[in-house]
Image (tube, rainbow, N blue to C red; front, top):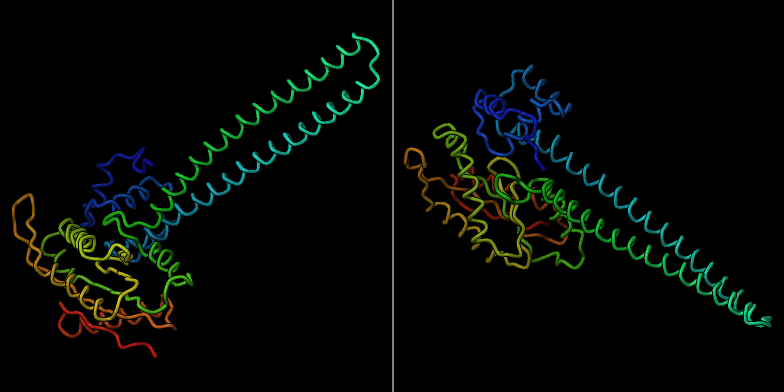
Length: 338
């Protein structure tokens, strides 16, 4: 999908530059949609924020993206679902027609077979045979037509499925990191909590936050801030178990849900993530400036039988708050739920 069509990119970049926003995908997309004027709800939100004198920062733009753009992708999926229903409705009509044609052929067949019993001369026998041949040929034509219809339906169904999967992924994925976004987290992690086959215990949630992230943006700019967020996400890819789910909850905050683990293993994972990021060193490419080391704080909660996704997140988030209050760059585990 070419979301940047019909708009001079310089206008979009100028809009972002005036507001000290980097040209990362979400910023560019929101600015483009607003300037293009094709998304009335988004433009209304931008105008209202400007009228109130609010700063258009990354957090506000992310909120607009979630509400007015990602939601649109879900509506597109609904449209494709309607398309799928029409497609299969047409298929059922073809099958009903084929069934009627088959019944007509059987009627012709029985009538002509019955006529054979009354045939007295070769000419009449030849006429019956011709009638049978004609009925068989007609049935064969309809059969080939149905076959082509089925093949076309199958091809269209595959295409719709692929488009549906692509839009679903787009709507639930954070463009900057490739992780689940908040909407994707609620949907995908919620499936685990609704699935009775997934154990209710032995599951850990980590809520992680980059320490002093605003200082990184202030000192080095939002472009470097985006790089920091991406590098932290890459650490998850190399350290977090493959079976786990990882999401960018918003801004510089992340969530990791780990199944089939113990509190000791979860604490060890959180420490590995924290230590890996603490040792990370970045250099800004254009001027070779060394970026000051940065750290993360982590809140950890083990799921109890009574926990929902929301209550587990609340306990892990409260543990994160304690880690922040306790000096940052540390892991704090929540007390087990009652």
